[in-house]
Image 1 (cartoon, rainbow, N blue to C red):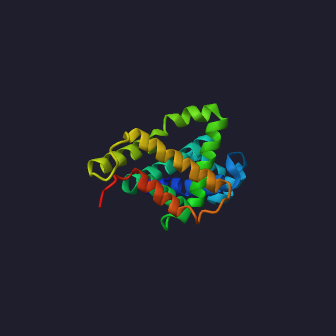
Image 2 (tube, rainbow, N blue to C red):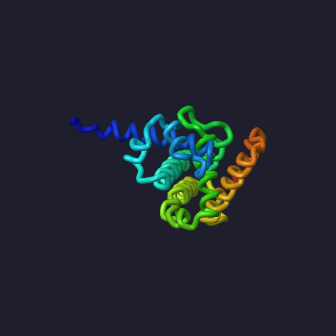
Image 3 (cartoon, helix red, strand yellow):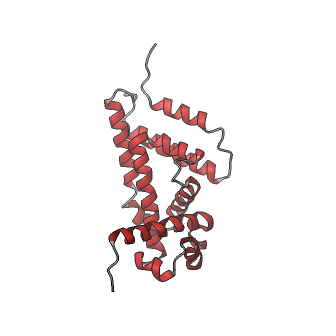
Length: 194
């Protein structure tokens, strides 16, 4: 029997994560049944659970994948850009509605599932770390206000992100949020006279 290449395994894993993201976004964690996961990924349960131990580990891997993607955007462009991507549609290869759905499920499960909260606590620092590192780089470049500690600015931006996520989750219009995000971005920048 021929061995399967690592590239093939990675592509299959990506296929599963992308399909699962759509499924979890549409149906929530509880509603994402194995049958729905099979339909969304185009794969059998055997193929899905060959790569992931169970639905919980699949969801955690998906949440980690999305957190990693968000951290990459934060590192390059800042946390406000993550918020802009959520409200405008993001990059061509991203599906922000599904990304938002995963974020909402993570938030809900953090409130209602102590075991998930314990698992997630070990992994959630990635976004905070990326945000703080970006803010430190901006401060060193002279672009960030220096009268507020970086951890406070990072917490502020993370709270705004949660507010944007809640706003979108309630189905409220997003077309008026761009100017709000402009204000948020200006509020952390260094004030320059003249």
